[in-house]
Length: 200
Image 1: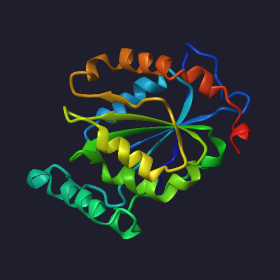
Image 2: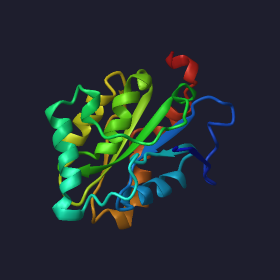
Image 3: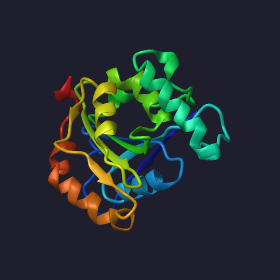
């Protein structure tokens, strides 16, 4: 079962102390790039974090020219509205009602959002309706338009931040500055101060 990690940063007032304006970071990471992004993000904002895990452990998505991962994405593309199209993930113990903002940190697989993360959002996206939604995408070099489209499809009632953040392989070494600039651009500090009860 995926559990929540609680983190706080040392350079900002915590919006979670009052129990309002809480932020949740949801991510999946196969190569470790998204995990590195989340660790950097956690150093800049106060947020709880939950990692998505495939139910079947030990799968090598890169084997046989990424055959497993490719097949998972193909199944979703064929029938995106059917639950059986999505891979099974480990249970996630998180109450989304507690959060007014959710930041999704997603790897790109074959132009789309990674299948395990799509599975989580498929089953929980409706619960995120009315909440502020941020999106950070990691890819080698491919553009992120289809991942953004996946996020909007899977969280149809989300109040998305004005823009997503794309961190490609050349940006990983500068992710601290990229994340900081993105948080300023979307005015995260103001968003994070919103009382969750106002969104209901």
